[in-house]
Image (cartoon, rainbow, N blue to C red; front, top):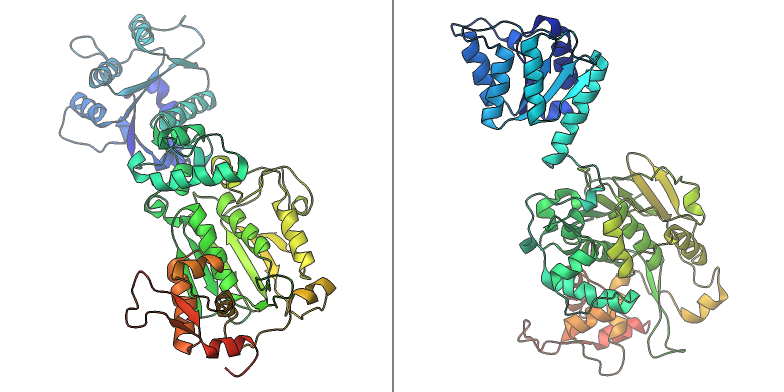
Length: 502
């Protein structure tokens, strides 16, 4: 909080001084950064007046001088308090804002005219003829002061520097991985061995050599250290309403890429899957209850286009009848909820964050994402996704109890049967990867084959339950933590997948 010192008592400018104080302290933005000192507001004290006002000049962050026609009271040396204050602020190197009343100097006393000229020799001064004009000019100057000190921003949030973050807070390995992936996906022009600084510069992720918010969100070692609310909260409810206790709840942290991957994995591990036969290929086809692409689109949109200045976090909530993805954001003025359902222009809320997501094929640039989501749900026999603006932006995808072959004859050729409900459908996917005769896969190989991104989640939610149920077994059971450890299907697991007794 900075103190604005408004030049000392001059009767002719008493109204303007009081109006400025009231305006600054009443403005929702300015009062967050400034308080105002007026000499006449001080209580009676056993101190010389000139000592008091000069002491206050020393303490202030801004000196706001109002110069009128009258020079005012003069001390023994013939100097007025107003000129003493101006000189003291000059000596202290205090930021000075000078406003001169009147369109010309015809009625100005000689000493005041001399002070006006002295100020003009040192800085740019502004003239005003009315109180509203003065308030407008002061407001503009204070906003400029805040921008110069980088206390407020006028550009996009993702393009401004992340306070207290340095280049050391970015992960060079993540930047290198991005370059390789973006090169393969979209032909990113920089080679994989490019310097991290060159990559960041190419992507416009630096502000005066400092990492921007987008840089930290994309490549930070610990993004939530600087942007606490950038995490994603995922919850699974067995009913249709939010109710405690929550059966499954996860808070994911990391870069935006990791947040999307983890949240998508969370949803896909909770919904139904059906595993078909190998009649058409060596790999048994898997059909998800909700299209993975639609789920991913809803989540990546929430992460990419949210308002990162909000204290709210993206929330992914899976209910018995629907998936809801909420983010603290809104639509740009050019878009409406109805326009989202039709081809529309791409208007990213965080353009510098969206570009690397596009380069890695997490999002599309042409505004086709919501249309693709709608089509994916239609193809799966689901209701079209719903979009709503409440206290944020909400995407809702309705669930539907799957009936094999109910709405697509082609679907019937891929799905031989519905796997029994007693085993989690996500676990059946792991079993299916081990079906080939003699298949033995490591944890990493199994995780890659089943497309689960988060290691801890995969082990706790999928691998360990199958081991405990006796459906899979370790190849080196006496050394469970061996780096050569692999897993294979047991007779019990094979019988389960073939429809026999569990």
